[in-house]
Every structure is written in C-alpha cells, then in structure tokens.
Image (cartoon, rainbow, N blue to C red; front, side, top):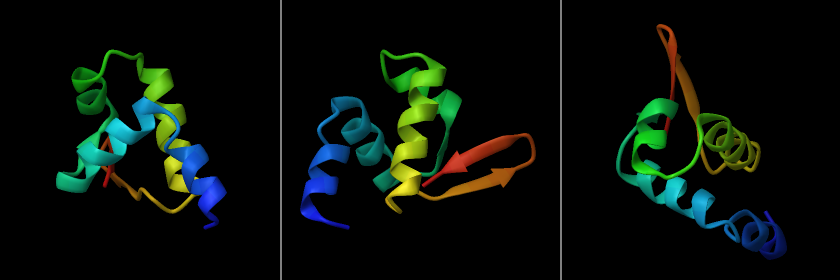
Length: 68
C-alpha cells in the first residue's frame, strides 16, 4: 500500500478509532457502534474500506460478522 493511500485511510478519526479498537480485540459491528458516536451504517462503510485495504479481516460466526 502506498503512503498516500494509508494517509487517506487514516485521515478519518472514525477509521483510526476503529482500527485501534480492533488491534486489541475481535469485535462485531454492534460492539464497535457502542464505543463510537456514529451509526451502524457508517461503521460498516468504514470497516469495508479498512478491509479492502487489507488492514482489517472479517469472519462470520453464526449470524454475526466479527472484525479483527
């Protein structure tokens, strides 16, 4: 990943906070939403962007998708 792309990804405080949370623990979207002052669709969009760049992984467990 180029530095420019990395800076663009982390230019959002929300994405940076999500990334920091996921460094320490695997979480589902609802748990991430509880810790941030944003809506579930917003968190989902940020997670998709982080996942496309290879910074976050997802794993479906039952009905829930967990991110790490």
